[in-house]
Amino acid sequence: MTWPTFVTTRDRVRDLRHLVPWLERVGADPITLVDCGSTWPPLLEYLADTPHAVVRLPNLGPRAVWLADLAPADRPYVVTDPDLVPGAFCPEDVLAHLADLLARYPGWPKAGLGLDLQDLPRHSPIRPWEESLPARPLAPGVYASLIDTTLALYRPGGSWTATALRTGAPYVLRHPSWAVETPDAEDAYYLTHARPGPDGSSWAAAVRG
Image 1: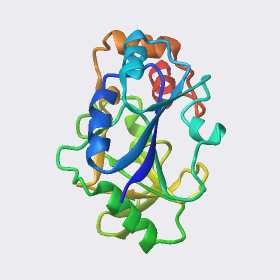
Image 2: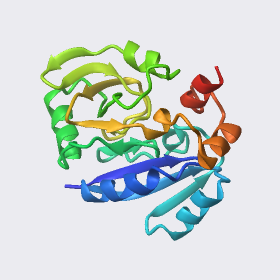
Image 3: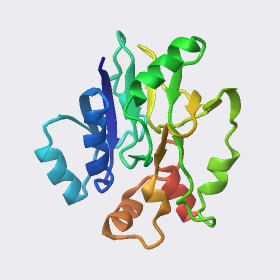
């Protein structure tokens, strides 16, 4: 089985180069890159060369898939941020696992992956937020929690909501951009052009204080 997958992009390509091949391997199909007004040249080059569909939008923020009415109404679908990579031991049946969780817990609107915070510096401004999220155990490795736009599988016709089933290890992702201590050119460009806040970049909001 395959799952339509939407990757929302905005001036980040470094981790996207690793995320997309992994999505291809784990059954994401078709993959659509939903670009929100990016101007970072390396990302624009990537989007010009990708074999996957590209939808170009103004900067609608990380919830652009729903604001632009792109989410399918007839089948489950995946939405993810672009700056995520799988944890070292994340199984490749990950999307089937999320689909199984939605079948086992019919009252939940989406099932998404947890985050591995081990490489996140203790002084990271975003760490307190992540560690404060509720995580009520429902079963081994399954929690009642909150997920913003980290990779999650949504029910057909589902809209965005933070309410989610969230997985524990080994079904976890890493957020390398959050762990950067010495920003490179991409990080600097992203921070300069990002719109901080809940309808933009939570990382930019945290870094800017």
